[in-house]
Picture 1: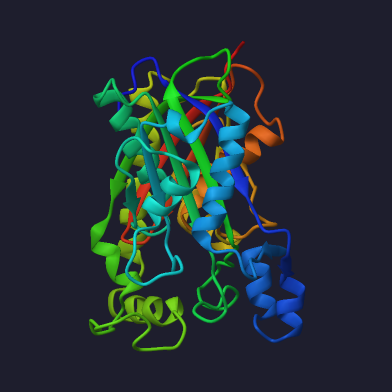
Picture 2: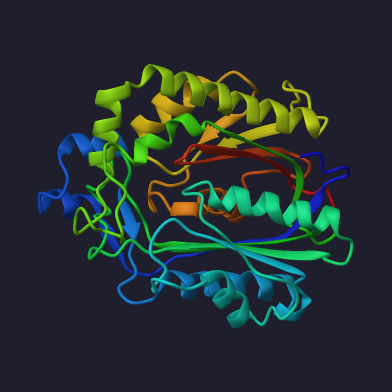
Length: 345
């Protein structure tokens, strides 16, 4: 996506529950093995014992709006992305978030494309602002809660521990005097032939959790790997990852060896998954240092990219004028690369 002079990220915020569960405690309860702990590298995850995923998204949005000095009525577009149950079976959480933050203008958009939902939603918001001059401002939220009743956050997947939380991004026309980041480039790609990794051999069912009481990602992945193997999967994923990074930089007019490129943030999955799936594709493309930002949150569903940007800002990891690259990915498979800079005031 060519963004011209770029768009402004006025504010980006992460909202996490105050309560946490530690990986050491999960190990003591025999929910995970020592190998799981080593392969993942996550020490703890935030856990919501009552606050719903959409309500966490509202809290993240309120925090971002307060930081920007905006109200919900200032928003011309809203989008909400998620990967897991939002609290009701037949319902639009995107409209709920818009209603709760007072976004009375525009039509809310709900995006459910697994863990790349946050990147896809941000791309949709950017496209809407560029295509429709009346929009001007947009809010993108994510929110997920992995309650034990439906999802084993520790052992439900290979090499990924899942944390509860939400994110919010405020996007508008660029203004370096106030923006937290400048959005310089975005690119997305898909490897739809890999959708079976989350389907396996399971038959299509008439309702959710028909086959098992809790979502079991390991079952579908094991079946897919047994039937199809991983060689073709890795090749397709690596090609797509390289393509989204190189395209985003190229369309932003940034050379791969640009010394301003400082950081590369990857999805908050386990160490082993990152090193096998992501590092071979992105290492050496630029001079960026790969940063580890999720060891105390785990995977935040659709919110990893926004959470990574928020962490980069909160930890002051970029000097004015420096550039960061954030990559997101989700089952299906879809990939998005976001290129941002810290504005030079």
